[in-house]
Every structure is written in structure tokens, then in C-alpha cells.
Length: 175
Image 1: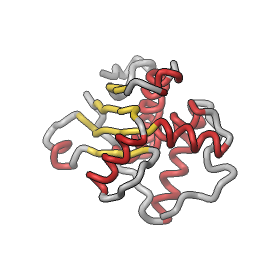
Image 2: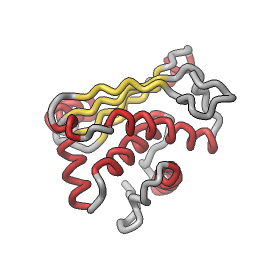
Image 3: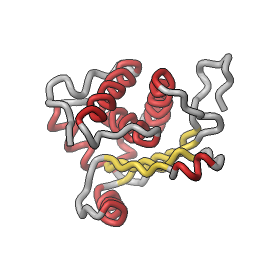
Image 4: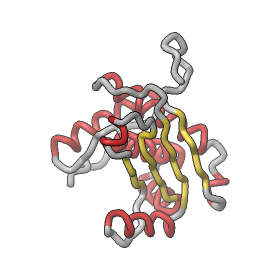
């Protein structure tokens, strides 16, 4: 739990579930996920009043096959994607459930995108973790205004992690 006088205490407890395989090649993955989640939560707290007391979430570092199945089963889209977020329903949060939700990230898609965009794998992982966490906190990118707000928050959060603007050389992500 976060003690108001302790700036090093995490805002959110993060359970990192790592599938065997290529994730083992990224030794710092678990620590990076925890840092990125807490940076996203700290960033969101600067904009909104969010109750994170006792909050927890899970991040599953998995593969394309698993994320494809999740995407198909939960979103009706039969393809692998880079990140999926599963927020805990508002009614459960209002009822006191401290679980913010779950995020899943696919290694192969992450690695392919990082290589294609010339980004360090760890930086792209941090970006996807921040993106997924912001979804759990209520951010979205369904409309142009929402997308701009979410991307701006991602930029601010990633800057606190000393990660370059992921949108600097690309067009903003709009639906």
C-alpha cells in the first residue's frame, strides 16, 4: 500500500504473469512492468481524482497465440494484437473491489513493432504497459478527442520513465 510520506512505495500492486519462452530474454521485463504501471497511475492522479487505495492489477506477458484467442473470445476479432486491457466493471469497483483489471501483452507482436519502428524492445513494452494501464483507469481512444487526451498522457508518463515520445515520427492514433 502507498504511504503518503513514501514516494518510492508503489501506488498499485502488480502481479506480473510471464509465460515461458521469449519473455525470458528480457530480464528486466517484470521490474519494467511494475515501474510503467505505477508511472501511469501517478500520471493519471495528476489529472483526475482516482481512488487507488489498495489497488491491484495483473499483467500477463504472453504470446501471439494466447492473445489471439483472448482477442477472438472477448472482442470477436480473430487476430493477434499487441495489448489487450480488461478493466474491472465499474459496479465491482464501486462495491469495493480493489482489482483494476488485467492487461495482456503479446511478445511476438511487441518485438515485430519495436523492430519495425526502430524502438528498443523495453521502451515499447513500457509504452504498451502504460497504454493498457490507462485503459484500466478509464482512458480510451474511441474518438479523436479521447485519442489525443490518451496519447498526451502516454507521452507525459513515458517522459517520467525517460522514454522517447512513441508518436514523435508517426501520425496520432485515431480510430
